[in-house]
Image (tube, rainbow, N blue to C red):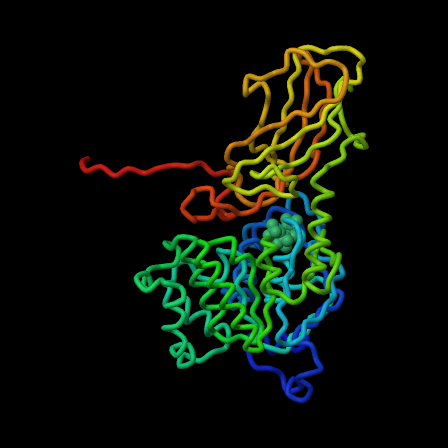
Length: 453
Ligand SMILES: Nc1ncnc2c1ncn2[C@@H]1O[C@H](COP(=O)(O)OP(=O)(O)OP(=O)(O)O)[C@@H](O)[C@H]1O
Ligand SMILES: [Mg+2]
């Protein structure tokens, strides 16, 4: 595991050798990079919320934490159960100066982890990264800024992290504020910002502080259409100015428009890299295949077997078969089920239960709850469509379980039958996009203010 160049240049100067061969050396070079997470409750909660700002103080803090844990008599690395998980495995690629590279892949593929490792927010477990330029990152909403500091203070803090002098930051200050449209809130702590304001400022800071490498994760998932356009324009401008951009997005149209090259990650590995159009085509064809989960080969199922789930597919608002659903949009889930008992069965119940990927039950869709149990189901194969008017899940990956009963006896039960991937969308109808730190589900709501006590 190691960093070369990057350890000196990520937040400081370009190392001397960059000047001698600037055209030949890639600005980013990643060799056999792997990142392992230890899935114990402590490790997970500690790493998840690491922000750019924390890099500055992390060494001190981790020592303090280590001491505090030891004093409290808690084990530092061994939680209740510690399990290894490789979020990146043997990832190698190079990026030339001035290239705009799109990193794509399904939820959980390792995209954000890759950007975090490149930004030195988290350390690689194995492999080697060489950066020949100063890097600025805009990672998930919620990272990068200190919530208690004002917008103004955060601009200066981020500039300082990037190794800029106060004078240099001051020169960029007005431009940043104008781009972010947060003039009125400059002296408000950013924890009071809406997620839209927050990301506007974070993007403005990252894009204007003139890094040689700009790393942007999902900024287009937040903000209204106009802001998204502005961001794309700014990233184009940054790249035309000869700087390098690494961009993660689920919006293929944006990736196609902005990027020259693409990297498709799946399960922490690079599946394909190359010209962006080809990489996107490959990605889309894979997600189509996966959305049709073939359940017939699953043997880890329980129940009498009178009924069997054979397939599940997901459809978007436009009734297109898709690999992921969108928050706030209509969705349909189609089950294929077969009754191979040779006779009509009665009183049939079908359920789909949604869990977090850590196995916590979130909700259940059920013919019983909808008062739609099937009185009779003849022998044969059937399709059952479940229509959801407005998907109230926060973007992320969920696991689902399938369950059916005939006359209250379990007929077929598959735990972890597959995943539901949910992309960001305009659930609240006002451009406020939910973030993963807001839990898993949303509910539309309204506040009223009345005078009196
Ligand atoms: N701090 C952490 N501790 C443990 N596991 C983690 C941690 N951060 C990420 N992971 C896991 O690593 C995998 C890759 O996560 P990552 O956030 O990089 O995915 P992603 O491609 O960015 O997904 P998305 O499209 O949903 O943003 C996921 O399975 C995730 O649960
Ligand atoms: Mg991500």
